[in-house]
Image 1 (cartoon, one colour):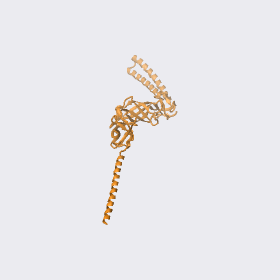
Image 2 (cartoon, one colour):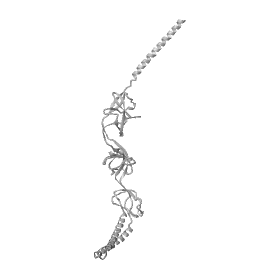
Image 3 (cartoon, helix red, strand yellow):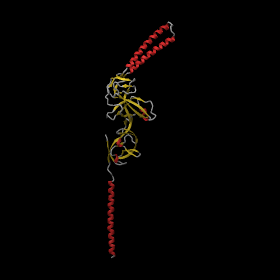
Image 4 (spheres, helix red, strand yellow):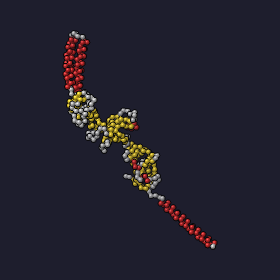
Length: 353
């Protein structure tokens, strides 16, 4: 009975040992197999070799488009509008008669003033002859002469008032909608119409203090407006000599040709202001940059492995970014597949042409 029990125990121990050995052997084989499988294949990426470039830095600004010349047309005198000599929305020339205010009363006053002037002139002539004969005193002659000068000035004043009844265009341009009709009683406070010269247009904008010293007369800028995809060109012609104390900006004006009437005064302009060009700059594609909590990073190739590099950037364009530090000439910058990369990950690079 005891022998049978001992035999059964030995048999169980033998079977258990065999099972344990088999499990251990399989586990070791799995570990070896897993070790072989942990070696991942290289990640296919694209890259570019960092080379020195000329970087034309630009500053994006907002401005407004204004007419080259703009004025509100007023009458300098009150009266009834006699005649209107312009078409609304039409082109007028410098010196062209725009409208006429009735001057009948003024002309009547002029006739009277001219008569007084002639009489005063004759009195002054006679007084001069009497003075030469010492028939009157110098004081009496001076009074007579003063009366003549006063009458002459009065006639000139009325002539000037008559001239003001004819309102003429101060410059050539396009005249807007009128607010009067023939027969309207007008005063100097009434705005008759707006006259604008749009053959050229002014672009007004402000430069931040940081870049104020880079603004030069006759420099060329480019701008766009929302109503057109065309990139327009303008030339800087005037600078404010000092910065605004409130905004710390410098007011700048540029002028652009508008002979084709592609632009209208009053619209906003998106201005591209060129800053000083940087030679031998490191410029990289914006898609190669990964934002991180402490700044920005990129990946470069390091003997077949990806290497994480932190960089410091400055200005950027639509597609490129200027790098100040972190990269050097000759580095192979990885530009695609970077989101799947980790530091020291194996890579296979296809260089861009």
